[in-house]
Image: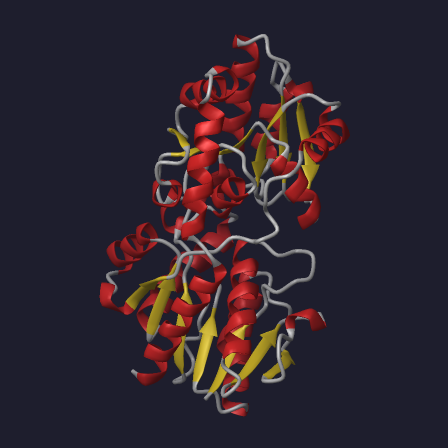
Amino acid sequence: MIIAVNTRTLLKGKLEGIGWFTRETLYRITRNHPEHQFIFIFDRPYDKEFIFSENVTPVVVSPPARHPILWFIWFELQIPRVLRKYKADLFLSTDGYLSLNTRVKQLAVIHDINFAHRPKDLPFWYARYYNYFFPRFAKRANRIATVSFYSKEDIVRTYHVDPDDIDVVYNGVNTLYTPTSADEQAETRNKYTNGIPYFLYVGSLHPRKNICGLLRAFDAYRTSTSRDTKLLITGDAMFKTDDIVKTHEGMRHRNDVVFTGRLPNEELHQVLGAAMALTFVPFFEGFGIPVIEGMSAGIPVICSNTTSLPEVGGHAVLYADPFAVSQIKEAMIRIAEEDGLRETLILKGQKQQQKFSWDKTAEILWGSIQICLNS
């Protein structure tokens, strides 16, 4: 079979959640199934590290699809031409975008539909595109994969898709994220916070990630305790970050917040391993990879009690209502002051994270591909 794949999220040094899903699943699938041919469709020059095996043929198709107008051109005009040229039997799209202009079978990995519930978090034309096309993509797909049972139920409820046509394919976790030594932790704290303990946020700076709520909670935590503690925020700025800037500027303890920007994987490993806890309290999440990264790195996790996060965190994390700053603050206080809590959460986290692996993810996704091809 000839399987064409949307690989535009494979960007060297810039892999986000969907990019990691794409890389880790395709790395395994292409190598495990040499009897099939894979056409990797990029929207810009690609790095050879993403050509995982000899049965992969890379194709670059312009224009670079990074805007709603360019998405339309790429998926509705260019993708159908590529599918015809290579006589593809299936189009796999790991970021959920499909083409409405082809008869080739299509499998969409729709990670979540946050834009259906929080359109104001996005620029107008982005939200307009998502909320016009994704309901149509969901109807057009021969099969859908998604990363949590929460997201499956949300897609079924919002887009009226048959639940039997949706497979749950959990994310895995990068094996890089393991506990670090005491010396490494001390060195990392010295590098970023002059040796002071810190809470950590990992992810993009985006309205639905609730960075403003986290900043307010940390400010309240510092005001109510005498503990010298920092907050590290790692990740790239995305959309509508003015409120984050204003909230930070209005903090009493703003000098205790460190924005690191995006960090290389190895550096992020060190920063995770040295944190007091991961503080990840978004309003909406389709899975929440940082939660299992924190568990794998051997630190406790504070996260939201909404959407998919209780499904991923299980009984191994400390939950807080993302809309209640006081609950986030109290969770921080408990991590800092409650005897034995950190150790208990770390042990539970180490057990919980074992439920997730990219090998399992790739195996289940391959099962979805087989069902789609044979449908």
